[in-house]
Image 1: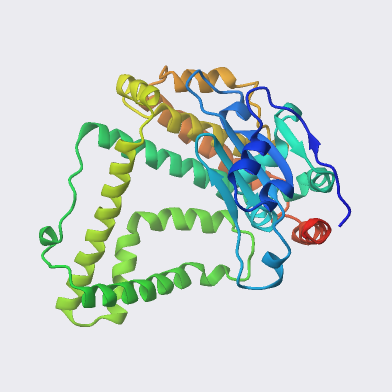
Image 2: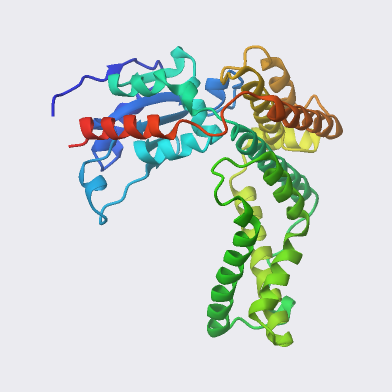
Length: 368
């Protein structure tokens, strides 16, 4: 294959591509790197003294990863420094689902682009074709997830979570019953998913009505799950045991997240949290994602570098807003996004064909 020189821009603090080359055993990750950027708060312009450096990249894997089924590669990831390099087709799938962390990659400022391959420039040139009405569901969904984290952290700061024990739920762990539980759980969840999405199976772009319906159903999802379980289990004692198993494993998962949170807390971030009573970083991401959602729907722009509202996010990170003020701000933005969704002229879905053709051409050109 004809060698195509990668345009290289030196980063003043470190050379992330050299780091990948020296530390990743899969050489195509660095050899076939087609895009590498500065990401996270550095790219938003909201970084503070304690902020880490984040880098994200895209590569083309060796040809064997596309021609058979034995070899699989989706991403290379390293912590400290924080570097994630996605395989191109994996990244493109996330892009066209309007994944916030991925759509941002195409819209960073030129000074945050560390490496770009001429072939990838073709994708940058059609980046607006990746935008669709799906941005409402994706960005607002991520904002909601940040809000849940914020609320969990507030609760964890106030009370210690104890590890759940099977005996507290009235049973003893039994491998055979655990296997039954896993099987039934999978079947019931498939039934629940089918019932929720059956009316929309031919609509690739999720509608506002579907989004609002799912949001509403989240309030009663346990009741929905239990009603479907009745269709599989008609013995009351087994039915109750399965419900207890489900509650135990849900609480156990919550406990593990709590333990991970305690173990991996950033000291500077924890100090602000102790002062203001909430995780300021989660709060700032909640507002940022909602504001970006509104901008994309109304202006058809993905503004990564937050020059125009940088002070707002820095103030949130510094804990200058009360929890109630943030909730009010978040709710106002959500209503703005719902209104913008109804009037936006963005297409219902991105141009899948255009991106699919271009990604195939890039893989064919670069994969060895």
